[in-house]
Length: 481
Image (cartoon, rainbow, N blue to C red):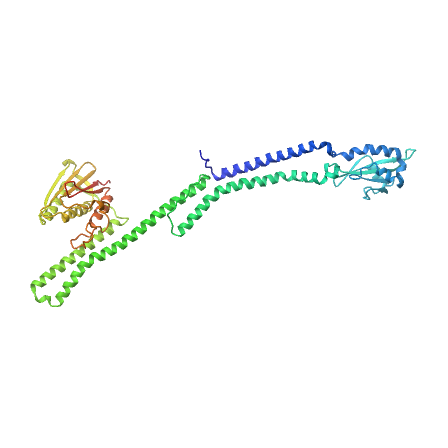
């Protein structure tokens, strides 16, 4: 199973608790090791109160000497009994004046202060200072001896003082060191989880800036917010790519349309220009020639107008605001009118035309856009008439039920090349690419029919018949109110 994806807030809180736990655990282990080390070397180290514990031994000597200690000659003998490496001493007279000692620091200024400090503890900068009285043979107070020492392990072990201070310092700062160390490790791990998605996003932004949309962001299952961000960015990239591809397609279609329009208009305009030039050169003097030329000019002009009409229709149906204009239509009357139109067109080419309709007479009122459906049927039927040979056959069958209207047109013409089946409904497509539109086919009729059918919640299907010819099926759905 993969790692669970959690929000960044929860991951930050979890990381903080991990840092805290590991720091405390490591600190406890460190302190435990230090404590174990001191226990192990306990017999080699003096205790922190080592110098304080030496005072009773020294005081036995002091009690034996008493007034003799006021003499400076006793200094060397006294110092032999005092561990001077960690303890200082002073010998004072009864007025608090320094007679001799290992330190000249003034702790007592007068007799009263001396008397007040006897057998008591004075504290100065981590030092403990104690004064003990000296008496003469008659028990009179004659002075005092004082000692200064520290109750620390480091001061009790001068030879190992550096190591002890270092261990103590490290023990003191180790919680902060561990906190920083684990903050770095866990923070680095968390930042790596965030760096990869951010780096991927930055690379994606750079590629988009360079007009490169052929990439895919990797999926990062680390942080919920970053996963959502990369997902949204990927959706944006796909949408942008789709939009740009569509824009490029539209641009290519525009270029193709301009080229196709220029191509299809060139022939009728060239014909018109040639015949007008012929008339200007004296063709009007021959009535028969004049009539023939004018008829040709009329036919070419009509062809150009027809192209403009189809282009205008394409512009209308392609517009985003294009919509059907539905109304209730008597389908029986609609089919009868269209049948008469198509039969007349077929008679002009000696084509046999058969029309049949199958529906419930009580349900012949349908809510449709008759003008647009007529355009669809006209374009499909004219396409069949155009490619059907003389004395050919065309059959039109209509069936509909409660919501669906189906028109089926069959002919016995040449059909179409199967390899071009997916291009039949594209703009300016003609089965014979060498045609120039002189037969009135500009490659827009089926595109218009297909577009209108989709807008009418329907579809168009075209395929070749096994027995020869083409089969077209137009499905229209009644428009809801």
